[in-house]
Image (cartoon, one colour):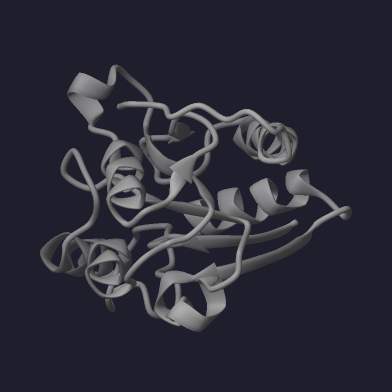
Length: 182
């Protein structure tokens, strides 16, 4: 099974979660982890499963203005966070606008503040819908991984992401799959 994990990350949290998911999918499958800026159609072409994740900004997927704001936060001393390379460039929203059909199966994840999604928002819900709109069939409901108020991953989230990756590797190889509405 060939799996491509596409992520958008501002401060490295979503990148770390994407890598942990890939680690959980494991050595029995071919897994590519790639930032959204490098995820051209050729990269996802032929993938059996595409896993897509990004940070939650202002209750949903990032926008150019929210990415610029994240850059300003990182540059303001003493922020304690560093901006990922290319973070202020095109994000998942722009990627979906140009990616075309996604064949095969997919899963969505996000990083967000811990709390009820009605208060924090949840980018993975929109990612899930866009994956479906682009033709992908979902292998599981969208998943959220939590960050602290200091923009660091909450304790245990890397391990939880790895376990979710293990779960994905099992459900993606089962013959009967179900759509998961959001």
